[in-house]
Image (tube, rainbow over all chains, first blue to last red; front, side, top):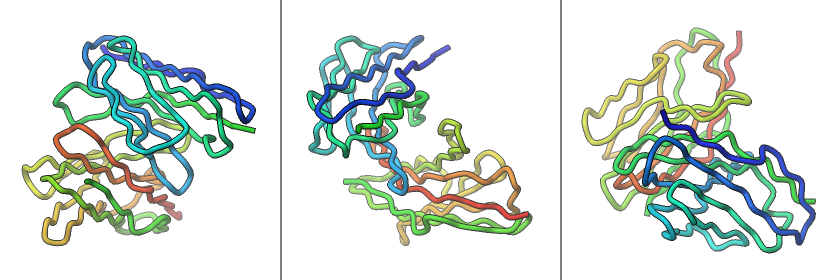
Length: 112
Length: 112
């Protein structure tokens, strides 16, 4: 069976510090991978989308970047965090050609 | 481009009465549409999906939705609300099963 791991669960970082959130998927190969940010009253905002190693599609210009160094690993990064980067970050995956998304448990990021 | 608009941020119904959660979509392609539910402190769960087959789609827990192309709508309904239906509901649009765009969410409150 397939599982998705996302860590850490919570993170408190000062403004201007770097960020690295990691997501890995087990039990499948060549998944489509996604990073979303969930903010109250704004639903889930698609940040990044990847169909393969090194292939990243950015949805909105922002202070964040994503990388996919391995087939089942998706990393969300920032060189310098802003207050506005605070939020709940969700990683998701799906089989290629499938329509169902599977979500990780999320990371609550607080930038102070 | 694809997007969804959930017309109500909060809906309150009494137990046993019908539920209507409204969603309008915009898509450059023939869309696939979904409803996800998120219970408090729980992950996102797929309720139902429309992928160009029957326009009336039945999902889990007695929910259903009707795809109306002329109205660009995909409203979620349930004949009789149950206390356990209290949650946040998200309408989602996708084209070609690649990127998935979430609405801002509707919080459903069910009164006893």
